[in-house]
Image (cartoon, rainbow, N blue to C red):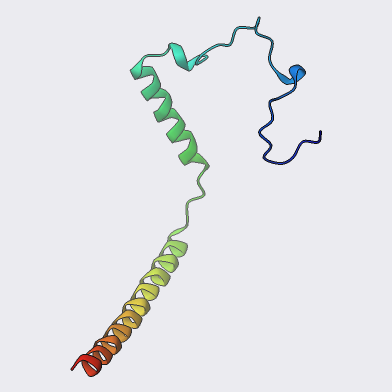
Length: 94
């Protein structure tokens, strides 16, 4: 029988892990207490923040200006549509 994508057949016998092997739970992290896990979490946060490419001041002001302009345009658009619907409702229902 051919394997289909999303098949729910059980894996073949050679694919299964032998039961004589013991699996470790948690590895190094499993032995640390709450403070050790918290310190590891903090170190991972700092490591990820060092990978971030931070924008320059010029890029930041450009991005901020674009966002503010977009929000102002959207506020104007929604306001015009809202007043239009209000007039239509007032005309239809009196």
